Amino acid sequence: MINYGRQFIDRSDHMAVKSALFSDWLTMGPKVHEFESEISKICGAPSFVVSSGTAALHCAYAAIELKDGDEIITTPLTFIATQATAMQFGARIVFCDIDTQTGNIDPNSIEQLITTKTRAVTVVDYAGHPAELSKIRDMCNRNNIFMIEDAAHSFGSFYQDSPVGSIADLTTFSFFPTKNMTTGEGGAVSSINESLLNKARLFGRQGVVKDPDQFLVSPDGKWYQEVHRIGLNYRLSDLQCALGISQIKKLQKFKEKRDSIFTYYNDSLSKITQIRLPIKSKNVNPMWHLYPVQVLDGSRNSLFEYLWNLGIRTQVNYIPAYFHPVFQSLGYERGLCPKSEEFYAQEISLPIHPSLSKKDLKIVVAAITNFFGY
Ligand SMILES: *Cc1c(COP(=O)(O)O)cnc(C)c1O
Image (cartoon, rainbow, N blue to C red; front, side, top):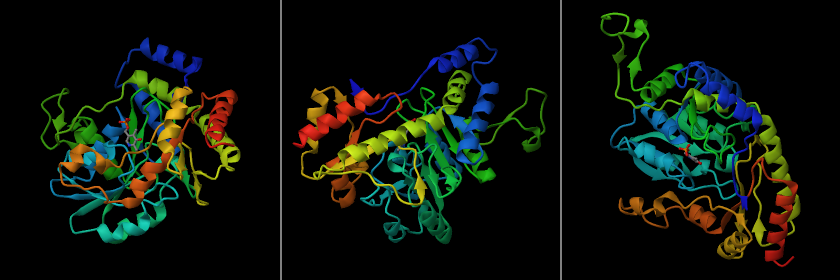
């Protein structure tokens, strides 16, 4: 069986988790801060860890004090967490169509959707390829709204010379097993804005303040702590952070491996006229999370079936969010973002992850070339 994505775990990961398991701290210990500082080195901004990419997004929306009736502009071509976490605060989702070349939000279609209720634009770096971050950054500044980046796919990617994590007001990462590196479940929030990062962290740490300098009431004793807002427990344990520290050491290797798979597919599949391969903009250096192909002759579904029967498990990323019954019941209708819908109808994500062998890749390429009659 060849999967579209999976974790890469070796002996050094085993040893790291085992040693954390025998340490004094299973959670809230030194591994948490060590992992956070390693994440910051990769993403170029102060960061804190959380229990999932979903938790990270929830913290980011908490940080901007999102409330009932606010609007968030975002892409439908993403996992539901991008929207669901904003909707937890009563926000309304305004969908913006994509650029068909990259699958990312179309920067030229955002501004016309901005209203007095718009609080933020949430971009998703589809497949690991950063969105038009600098254009969108400028537009958000001009309109006095926040820029949030769901970088679940793009930990380790660069936009121009800036690492993903150092550009948006708040950037969120996921360490789910299929993502660029893993802690089992896990995620992180980064921001160059200290006050926003503190607000996000406070939400993910149950609103508890332990720093005496910040107390609003004089302390009763050494045990004293204060709750400044209602939050949630989104901590990541030391066991998971130990795995994260071990994984992050391999991130550059993972990136090189993903890059070589990207190049191999590009070279081996370029002759097939029925499909369009992913492109890379000049100004980005992606960590390729997905290898998304567009099937142009209407045969995506049968290609998916064909590969499935050969033990090749591809994926389709994504069903446009508003196709889901939960959005239909809120009055969203099909046809809202035609480019996203077409992208969905044609898309198939080929296997790409560091555990794939040359032989696996040859099997995938042979199957696809065979399917299209080459
Ligand atoms: C995986 C993913 C998430 C959610 O991350 P979890 O760690 O699974 O909660 C959010 N957004 C996108 C685009 C994702 O791919």
